[in-house]
Length: 134
Image (cartoon, rainbow, N blue to C red; front, side, top):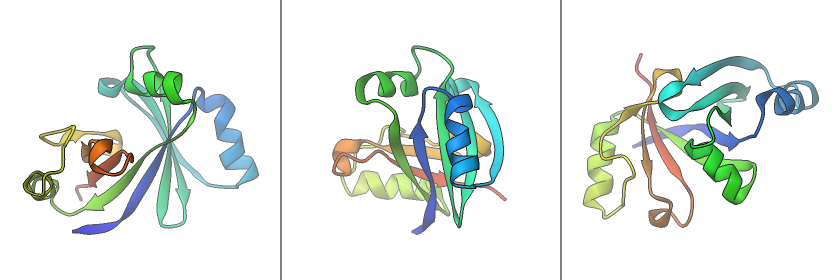
């Protein structure tokens, strides 16, 4: 079912001010930066061994990430688990009584198909299911 921890999402106010810590202090390679307009966020991808870190900067005050930072401050936002068939995993979660934020997969950063579980179903952790095609 779960292949690996695909990435850890980290909410930040500014990629410009945050990236140097990850690239210059921790020496993590920057794989790229992408804007996901549908989610009102800019994402910087960093390689950390077999897992990626995704720094999430809001592009609008009404984005989910902006609201998260306003309420909780910067920091870990979610853990993404790589799966083979996201549709089957969503169905399985529903059958097991897990509340899904996304009833259907949507397109996330890097073109991945994603769906989030509600934190109340995962002991307060926002868990993302992530299927990467190809």
